[in-house]
Length: 226
Image (tube, rainbow, N blue to C red; front, top):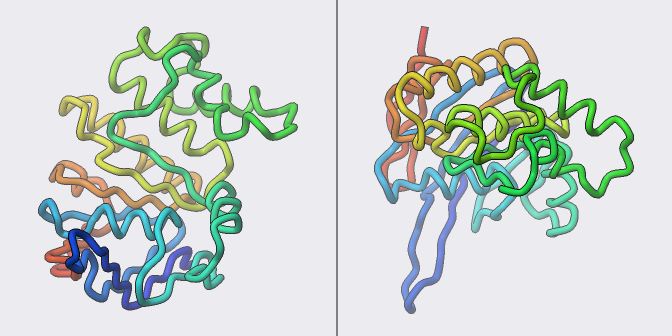
């Protein structure tokens, strides 16, 4: 099942009286359970594409469908609601709240929900990513890999169909990076969650189903991985 279809995405910004074209007509699709990396040099449009796929930005031209629904022209409120229900985010720098425990950090996206099962779900997710013995630890009591696992658990708290990861191994050493990528691979395979990782790290390509290369805002060579 296709969860994302992007057609001829163009994104232009006005800056200093000039127009900058960050994306120049990108087509992209993503299926349930697929793990895809997007690579390219700085300024190639990777983050811009990720922001559009994550409903954090709108394209100047083109069309985006999410789970078969055209979401190109949705207003801010509807985009926010749909993003919360459908998409999880993982970032390079974790963005954990330092005064909260691991469980509380995972619960953050659902803090305003009247859900009595919220804490139990957060604990279950942390256990799944190997942190069942770190539930009450604050971020300063966790290693870099453990912090990223908390961030992954947080991204899954709303049962998303898609997880978008921005340089997820960028702050990690090689061994820890492999552990995190193993976790992403397991989530894609066992939970049928579609994952997109924007990265400069070639290691990621050992774990993904395919790699999409962006060059100057357009899709270049695409590599399928066995």
